Length: 372
Image (cartoon, one colour):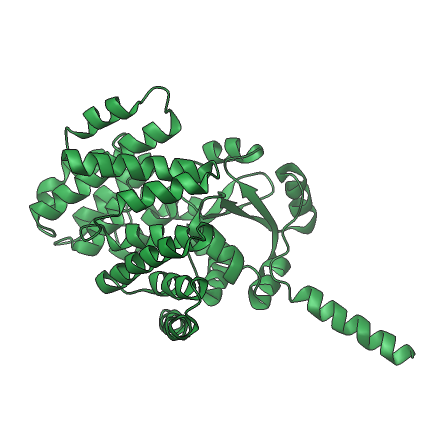
């Protein structure tokens, strides 16, 4: 009997430890005190309730026993919604503008390292290792930069580490990075434009100032498409966050300066749809999205994948889910990746097509493995 009890305790302990990252249910100030006592860094999962990659990480990566073992041994782990409670001020303090952001700070609150976006288990463990690597400590890297380091790989790494938190500094690094290369390529342009969050961004000014250089890597049509998307995102972000100031008519009038009437109306519908979703008005979200994506051939693979994913998470009407399947298929056709293939599998499962669900889930798993 005694052996049985001991065995049960061992099994219970193993199961408990294999539950993934243990997030402290406490305030950041108490987490700092614990970090100081245990001589550890604090890992903050900075997320929002509407962020799709945040949900995927919480579902697929954080529960991993391997990930949990590493993070629980090396960090004090805290999850904070950046749109609630102390998260609102933390987002301002650390200039967090994209989600998910993985922030590593010391017990005094000094930022040591950050990362963002989706990861698999192995790459997320590597994120934790990077945070503990003195050679990737932000203060150390900035010192090397100020001393004149101009190796392109070093500069690119520094851009990725600072672009979300310190755009003043990131613009300086981009300037040196562009000058360090004989000719920039599309990947360099993507590095720049993927981090432009609006027309008020200093990186947007840099994007405009360096147009002649950028046009050596992409066509003028591609440049104008990117420019239009930045302006659109800026306008409708303002509309979504201050609907009393930016009415439908005023927003459409402003959008008509750089969009066709049809494009402007579609963007307004999408904006209102996601606003309805944030208010948990699923019926309105569903109706507006179906109207906005009635014609989808020119929609980017990212936007189609995003729309399909939100339908897989929130919508239950079979005919609407079948529309979302078409969006996901078009996204896959344009640019097949783990996320849109996985979304397609989820949608097929939700409409009860187990054969197609299994087929696409297997392909998603293969893509995930190939990206490791």
